[in-house]
Image (cartoon, rainbow, N blue to C red; front, side, top):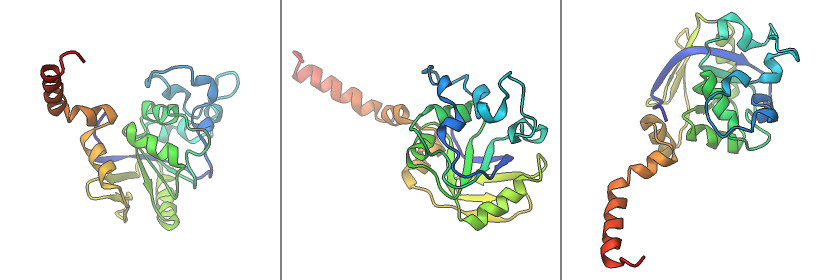
Amino acid sequence: MDKFTTLTGIAAPMPLVNIDTDMIIPKQFLKTIHRSGLGKNLFDEMRFNSDGSEIADFVLNQPAYRESQIIVAGDNFGCGSSREHAPWALLDFGIRCVISTSFADIFYNNCFKNGILPIVLPQEAVDVLMDDARKGANARITVDLEAQTVTSSDGQSFSFEMDPFRKHCLLNGLDDIGLTMEKATKIDSYESQMAQSRPWV
């Protein structure tokens, strides 16, 4: 998993509330167990017509936002079913951070396991960042995980809360496997001892 330290990038404004996981990645794309390749189907029913052509007014289809790395979203982002494919699709598209007033719990937890930083801010702060995002590609938002701040393109800064363990994992690029591998020396030592003391196991 890639580390998340500081990100300065284009933010896509998505003020719609209750963006659920089926909107993020529709159910017909859940057949794969691979984390890559889902970015092309991110927000599929919102991005594309039935013939595959782009819906021009959808934010991620607009030239200014095609390289977005941040989404500033409405309330209750990631609600619905508990599909881990949703953060997979966001990450594969290039989204590393989502900012909202609230997230569905399972989606929120899945983001951390996949290197995406979900940030909860008060409505007033989200409104400022939403307006900033609407300025287009020249208005870049900076997210500093170490300092736990989000800074708009004109310098307004907002602090966010973050669980210390989750912060440690993102800063160091540690998913569940990475956390286990941090204990590799102790695991190897234990297995060696067990092999000597209980060779029949």
